[in-house]
Length: 147
Image 1 (tube, one colour):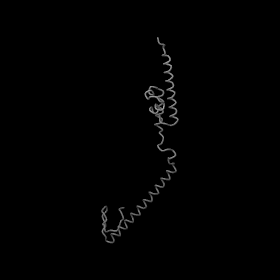
Image 2 (cartoon, helix red, strand yellow):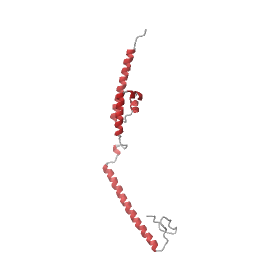
Image 3 (cartoon, helix red, strand yellow):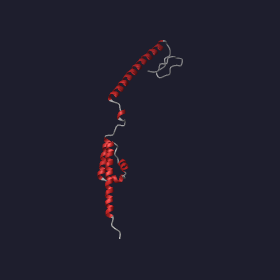
Image 4 (cartoon, one colour):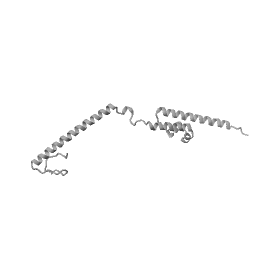
């Protein structure tokens, strides 16, 4: 008759279960400390366990869900901190853009006045003036575009 070794098997299974739990909890702590997103798939891969096993462990499952919800609320910015603009640099860029906009507005107004004078000169000289939107006759040497 064979000896009953079931007690040894049960002890071995319990020990393996506790080692797996300890390894999984350690993995959770490491992922959380590193700021890595925590998901069932990532934890399973790092701990070397199956996702289905993680779902059966209520406390581990609750911790993964808690950490996952924290990561969703506080997502890191897509641009690394060293590459993000400071408030001062953004303010300076805005000032430059506004100054450029002012310059372009002034240029536009100057060109509109210049166009109006040229149009007036054409009319005063009795030369044909194209309607708005119509092409200027080819023999004209004036190349001022619409305002």
